[in-house]
Image 1 (cartoon, helix red, strand yellow):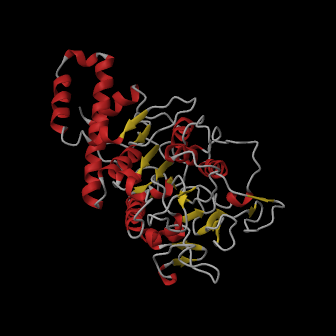
Image 2: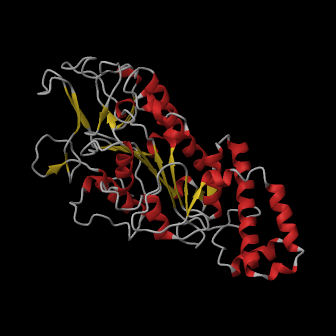
Length: 418
């Protein structure tokens, strides 16, 4: 099948919403929306395992009223990277070269500890009852139905009341060594009279698309030293055959259990969390390296990184840290996001001032209009996952994504939106 035959076939099948697959050439106009082939994308990265945000996005230093029994800190104040109001602890140091692209929301409160899976779902949907679809599903439904739909891995992809096509990234990766079989299949049916059958045409077109995407993914992996997963997602986006993805990067790194450090926290958690942020950094590096629509694939992709909760500030009797649902952090970057800013904060109540006799780490209330952290309840409130999801939905421009209309609009979160 030559290129003209292939494009004619896929046009008849309604499958031409992608760049010419033989070369993935960047022929689209540079302005967003100026050409129907220019798309926007959404990637949700779940750092499951319960990451201690004080090591990454919300680093702490001791004050006159705190010590290691209040906040166990395994780094020096000078180890904290700061640029503007962005602060990164040593665990998130892989992100420092992207500080101008980062928007951090600190002090996100999870309400109650209902377990790892329920809380990562809450952060991914803004719905504590798990009745809504995760944001990548909503995004895919809103903007386009593609051949592969939502690219996913082992993470639980919540559908709510929605129906959406999903594809396991591993199913695409597993085809890497089967190009010869795909070619044999194509050659067989090109020489067969059954080729005129629509079912055979559909299968042929799908096989050709998958083959081209796999080849492009292998090229990206070799050229940019990206992982198979990152390369497959980028190739699918470039081809316009997927618009969103949801990955559990905690389990992808094999760190999921080691992040839940109820014992032996020192060193172990920092190392494993650093690996998670390195994965995020690698995504940014790859997407920033790929030309798309007159800019880069990064400029057309919204990234959201979440964890289910933070961890208690002090070490327990087993030298570990337990779950803390009273503060959390979210990282946003890419399309629709104003980078270089942090909104929200958290504070530690030392054990000597706590009615419970041990230190507590809470999300701080903010003035919903100005974003200033305040300790008065008048005109202020806490930041919850649903507030974050609503703001991200606004950033990526969805209409059906206008969730939670009954909630007070936190105007300060709107500062994240371009």
